[in-house]
Image (cartoon, rainbow, N blue to C red; front, side):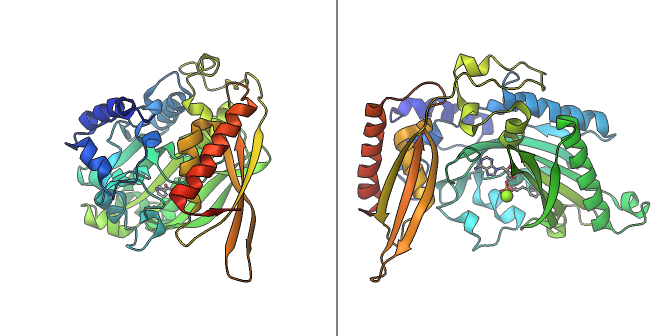
Length: 387
Ligand code: FA5
Ligand code: MG
């Protein structure tokens, strides 16, 4: 993927689509404030969520169906808003504090110092409110520097839901505005879960988001574990006040489409959503929710351990991105298996890398090559000392 045409093609279509102009791609990419690697650029404009035959498109349409048939007020739907957004849209507009970790170069992809690849669909709340929308759903690709395992991927898809209430709605209920909205929100999302899954074990967890209060996460029991599928809450009044709705109350949610689709279609690994293998793609049909994915074969994993002395600038996200840069989707998991500090104060980490293809058996030679490359780049780019 070092071939520039690979990323330039899709990027150009996204730029046209979103109407944001970045005139000189090369200049932007040489910008030291740009931390977007080719592996990520090549994903821009893929729009998996707009393909009606793809599990993410099937799921999106089914959620639309739920909102269309259960609410008297129509939800306005957006699924092609540009993923390049300003720092203001992604963070300031949703009250993310100036020192919040999510703003760091370690967590977010910056195209330049003022522009990011959105890390959540919440980046569009404020502008849509200002445009007068009061019930809306926003679906799109979102981007995060993150760890590597079967449920995390640096590009994934979210659907944002937002609903504004007017005073007469909660006044009639007899409860206060916030409890009214919180209750309505939970009812709505539990209804959605039942619509999608029928009976499923779920639980609510109290949490924190800068843009909602109270805030909750919904978890679903999947493959012997609780899987977090969405975050939500009652919108901070400040967001409504700033965007022309001072007298209203609202709820919002952001759900992870891959997480829900994994449970629905029994898809064991998040990398599969990007597969172009016919044996994957041909299993899904527009409008069919009940299909369970049949793995074509389970290819054997291969484990490689690597130990090194870290330095102050070392982060796990940097390591994961480097490994993905070398191995692409052949890396299934990166996990810290040992961690100690010696008497001189030096800290050693041992990571286990799991290599596995979803589509074929890997040869020893191929894996050794990948691992050799990873080791070399870890030393030269992360400046750590291999042990
Ligand atoms: C958010 O992104 C909030 N914007 C959600 C929200 C919206 C809260 C509106 C309140 C109001 P969070 O970072 O938890 O929250 O991500 C939301 C969901 O995205 C998660 O529950 C999970 O399902 C999914 N998700 C997060 N990281 C990844 C990843 N690396 N790969 C796949 N899915 C992910
Ligand atoms: Mg979360």
